[in-house]
Image (cartoon, rainbow, N blue to C red):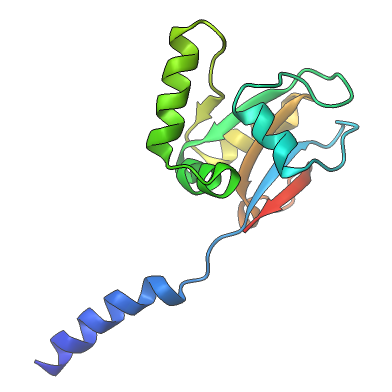
Length: 138
């Protein structure tokens, strides 16, 4: 009985004390943009802007695994609201959402190969990859 209580207590308290992973917005190391505001990043990922402030065309990538926490931190909206937003934009022919990639390796590879790439990833996944961090979201 005591083991069961401890097991349920642990399962309940673990998420409360778990350290939340730091999500960072990254770009290609050769992109002249070195820092961006949350509003600028939101404009690109929500399709309102298609270029960086310097005029370089932005190519946004969604990381499937980090998508929900990223949009929650960036927009304070649920992933269902984000999906509904993009459904309206696509239906009206006004744009397409960022390309979804399923792994950190593919995100890093896409960003390293494209000067205009912008994506997000868990900071721990960057390792020694040659990418530039534009903003940290916590």
